[in-house]
Image (cartoon, rainbow, N blue to C red; front, top):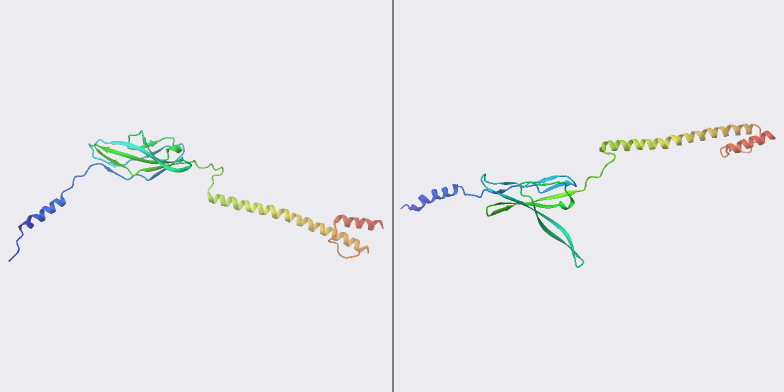
Amino acid sequence: MPLKAPHLIWTTPTMMFLILLPVPSWGLEMQWVPTSVSVFLGEDTTIPCNFDREPNESVKVSWVLIYRIVNATNNMSFLQTIQKNVSHTTQNLTIRNAKKHDSGLYRCSVTVGQETRNSCGTYLRVKEPASFLFFNVAEATKNRLITAEGIILLLCAIIPGTFLLYKRYQQADVNKRIWEAYSTAGKAIHNDYTSLTAVELLAIQGVHRTI
């Protein structure tokens, strides 16, 4: 005998209808915001507060700044988190002429009726301006300049050294000729003329002439 279950005849279509029936949802929804924003001292920046809402919904936007300071109590230092309300009620927060104390986590709150939603927050980092470079050149140009400097230094070492060696060679040749002239006269006592300076050789030659 087949099992009759009349309640199953309407239960399945009813459940399918309830599953497919759209669930009403609240119109306000927070969206993604940048996690951090960097700006140099004195520059302007904008921090967004992204959200979706129903066209006819009236929203109220407020901003808070959360930052941390170091407090010293009883010779002990500790970090303290402070939340400060920002007098700004627009969707995007604009900070002009940024200063160091503007650094911190900025979070917006959006209120519709009795409901409030908060953003994840965006951390503002105020940096010191980049140091001024007198020679602002690319790395490839720097490498070329370093190579040229090395070549110039090498030439400054080679050219004077070569000139000094050439002068020494000329002086040795002059000494050799003087010594040969002295040896021809029969006055040489040994063959080492390279150890004598030009002054000594000229003195010897002058003594030889006086004899």
